[in-house]
Length: 409
Ligand SMILES: NC(=O)c1ccc[n+]([C@@H]2O[C@H](COP(=O)([O-])OP(=O)(O)OC[C@H]3O[C@@H](n4cnc5c(N)ncnc54)[C@H](OP(=O)(O)O)[C@@H]3O)[C@@H](O)[C@H]2O)c1
Image (tube, rainbow, N blue to C red; front, top):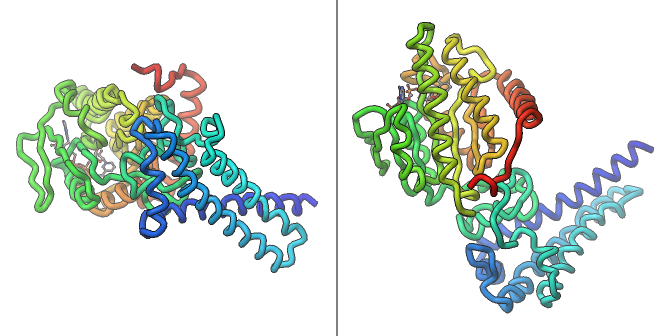
């Protein structure tokens, strides 16, 4: 009996997931096949960047041309799981029609919006409501902030309508095209590898932040070099306002040193300068566009959970990791952690992975909206880090006071 109930539940949920996948694939198709795009383009004509419709007439038309056909395609496709379960001789094949019933709610509400039934848009068109964003782009579920990016960041990304699964699989959950990205530690091994990789990913403007005096030149990569120093982060204030994604990548390893000077430099470089730049960048998140598009990627290291055979490197990187965990409980924009294992660089000449490969995986996973990007050859990190992050974040959440994005300013 229990098995039967579980099987029925699984079939019902699978039929809903199926129609959601169809919705998203139809949307992708609309952007690559002009006959469908001719209908879909109405959806893109409707809204101004503040999500207020350009006109009531266009808003209504858009539902007849886009939302209604989309729901009809979903409805037809919803019969496939039902047909398959009938053919398989399942006693409870009717459960597979849950996806059809679910789709009917979208079809009816799209028709109601097309007819201009009062207030139905407020109740059913939830990802297009105007007003200040009160949450970050959804990670697994599409919210207003996430869907805004499809309209105004990059129409060839962020295709999903309810769940973000298809975007994660396609690598269209985060678009780097046309972005301005600044990276610290830019003259270092990973810094240079990331600059090259981001250039290949279509980033519009790359800013190399370096503490050295030399300009950074990479063949075929257009970039601007800006010099900064630990302790003088405030000097980057105006620049950071113009940056979409800040990658905090600088770091040092004092290896076996444990004197006062080594303690000071490890914490100042690895922990406090990174934290100060993080705070400075977060203070620049002011508009809906900033909440939707600005991001920080912080390179902490797998030393957060594993030994690095360098006590001060571990201590300073763990302190940074914990500060990021605490801060992103209510950060006004997305903060990703880069949890990297040993790669060959000036800092780690005996590292096993190559920085180019690590950079490729980082960019690939960021475009799939992975918020803790783990790249390592150590399988333990893939188990230990998520567990530690969950426990520490839950502890911080329970023992400290939070505030909402809106109350920050
Ligand atoms: N290599 C590994 O195995 C490994 C593993 C996990 C994590 N990581 C992390 O990855 C990041 C990049 O390291 P990497 O391996 O590419 O090493 P790297 O080649 O030594 O690059 C690190 C860069 O950090 C900057 N930096 C160093 N000391 C600084 C200081 N006092 N003030 C300001 N900036 C300073 C320098 O860049 P500028 O001269 O351009 O400022 C330096 O080139 C670091 O955060 C490191 O902890 C490395």
